Image (cartoon, rainbow, N blue to C red; front, side, top):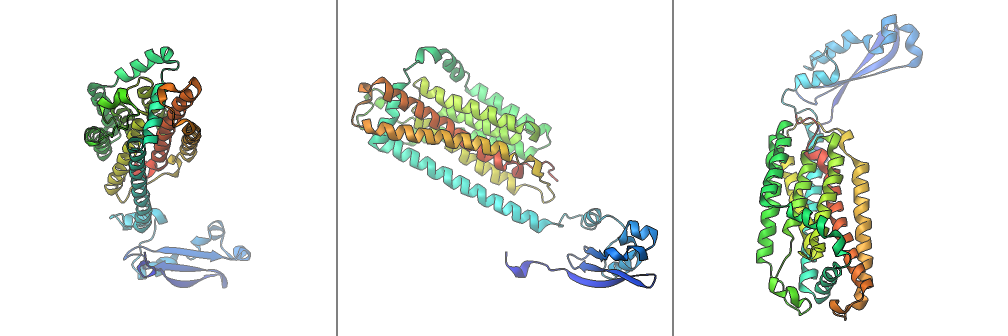
Length: 391
């Protein structure tokens, strides 16, 4: 915004005269609007004894009549507190609109950047994991390593994955929409529903139309073709992110951690059950994160000018903690996969227990870390998308 577009107030100075003394001055700053202005004053500390008792208690009472006259000459209403007067004089809500528009503009830029970053990351994951020999080999090693300790986790894994169905997704979506509606947020209810629907429909479309070349690395699963992104993981992640959006601020952090944990567990469960490769789960999280950014832009577009954002709802510490967990998990994944590439010339079926376990555990860390980071980014900005007072 150029400097020419900023409206500068025009000051009208007045002396404060009390009993023949000049204890200070006032400045009437006006031309903010046709009827809006601001009165500033200054009183010397040594001038107190020269003021009447009422004026000493409140120095602004001394020039009350004079400043009211000056204000009325410029068409500015007086007699009420500044904030109340401004709001009453400006029922359209234009007071402070430039500040709100600037904040919303930067939030929109941030959301667009997040959408582009996550879309780029999704493209890179797909390109590396599906269209390179090293990527396919790493995925195959992780899948082969899931047999380590599989007997102990088969029951919980099957229960978690089997609980996900079209019916359960519809029920979860209805509950999320209901939470938004009882809070009086119709736009939020529609946006959260569209986020879940868009993420899951696009997941199925990508899975159907993307092609996986056969490099002979995983002949057992070659017939199945492409499996990226993971549908089960997208279901869990979309519900978790939508829940962060609709929950009230008091329970939002708890919902974020529980939702992120549930979605991460679902992603790891698809790997443990042998249903999906780790890159499938990571791609699903990134896709949902992209849809969350788009949903945020929709909420921002329909946000009222008089909406009030509370800094107490920012959840900066919780978002930072969740993001730190994600970064550390992704770092552990990177180190594990980098170490594993030393065995890249060996077929996955011929690897020993140690590299198989490192491949599996490192991939699981990557899945959990991606979800934690996506949830942290949403938690960090949600207070600007769903303000405490919608206006």
